[in-house]
Amino acid sequence: MLFLFIMHILFMILLFGYEKDYVYGLSSLFSFDGEQDFPAWFSTLNLAYSGFLLYLIHTKSKIIKPDRYWLFLSCIFMFLSLDEMISLHEKLIVPLRVGLNLEGYLYFSWVIVGLIFA
Image 1 (cartoon, rainbow, N blue to C red):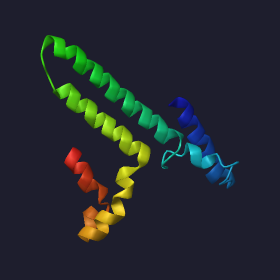
Image 2: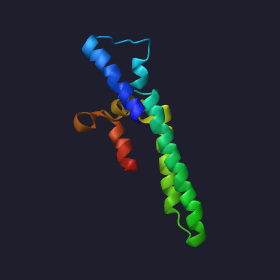
Image 3: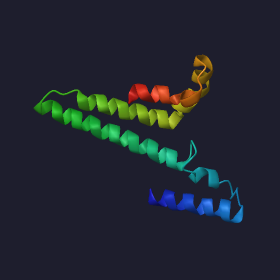
Image 4: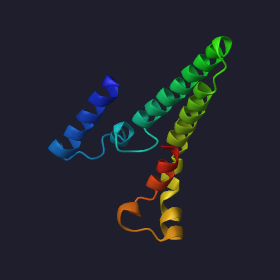
């Protein structure tokens, strides 16, 4: 994470300080505001690893007391990892906005989908 942060800061300095917006095509790979870049993949792996750990907790807790909460959390984290990897909620923004004619606070229509999972 520290490496990604340092690279992001370096490319922001190059972009805004020296107006070098394209540094061998690498600047977009380290942007924390992008999709399908190194920070997004790092986040995807973190979410998947968390889902895996929650599944391990579920399997170990089954021995002591049958509990499906850990499995439910594991599935949520795996779905979040998948969403981060394929940018699902970004792909739903325009169809939901147009289909439901959303304005104002709901203009960013992925909030509706996020509220369902929250």
